[in-house]
Amino acid sequence: MSLLPTLNSGVSALRSFSTGLDSIGNDIANVNTTAFKSQDTSFADTFNGQGVQVVSTPTNFSQGSLSSTGVSTDLGISGNGYFTVLDNNSTAQYLTRDGSFTIDPNGFLVNAQGYRVQGLVGGSMGSIKIPATNVGGAALQSESINQSGNVIATYADGTQTTVGQVALFNPTDPTTQLQSQGDNLYSYSGGAITLAATNAPGTNGLGSVQAGTLEQSNVDLTQEFSDMITMQRAFEANSRVVTVSDTILQDIVNLKSP
Image 1: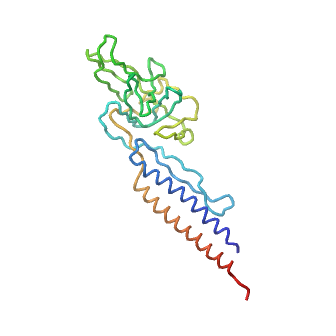
Image 2: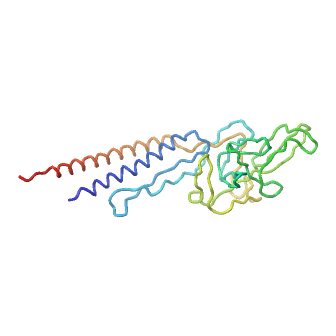
Image 3: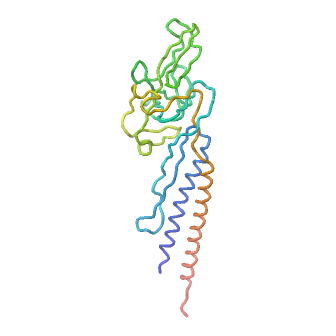
C-alpha cells in the first residue's frame, strides 16, 4: 500500500488548519476593534477525497454590542444597515459600521480617514456638513444627532437647524456583496450606492442611530479560544501523521535484501 496518500492528507491538513489558526488569531487580535466582524473557517475534503481543504472564510456580520462614549458625533447602529462614507479625492464610496465620526475643519462629518459621511441633504444624497455659523452669523454652539439620523445644529443665538440626515444602506447579501478594505471599511459590489428617503434610519427595516455610542467587535472570545484548542489538537494530530508516514517511508528506503 502506498503511503503517499497518507502523507499528502496530513500535509493538506497542516496547511488548512494553519489557515484556520490564522483566522482565529486575527479575530482575537481585533477583539477591541470598533465594529470588527469575526470570520469563520469552513473545511471540506479535497476533490479526490484524500485530505482536507479550506473552502471559505465567511464573515460573521452579526451586530456587536453598543458601548456608550458620550461623544455626540460617535454613532452606533442598532439593527440593520451601514453608514456610507465618501473619499472626496477618489470619489470612492465605502460602507462601514464604525461610527467614530468627527467634524473636520471644513464642517463635514467625517470618519477617521477623513472620508465624508453621506446622507440626505436637501432631499438628495450628499455629504453631511455642519456650518460654523448660521445665516444670522451666530457661531455653532453644539450639534446632536437623533435616532432618525437628523443632524441638528444649535447656534449661539438659540436657533436650531437640521442640516441633514445621516442615511443607512443595507446590502441584500453582505456575505457576497461586501469586501473588506481595511480600516473598518467595505467596498460594495452590488452596484452604485444611492441614498434616498427610503434610507432613513428606523424605516424599511433599517436600524436606528444611537448617538454617543459605538458598536463593539462581535468576537466571542470564549468561542474563539475553544475553536483554537480544537484546531491546535487537529494540527498536532496531523503533524503526527506526517511524522509517522515519514518514519515508515524511511524504514522502507533502508530495507536491505537478506
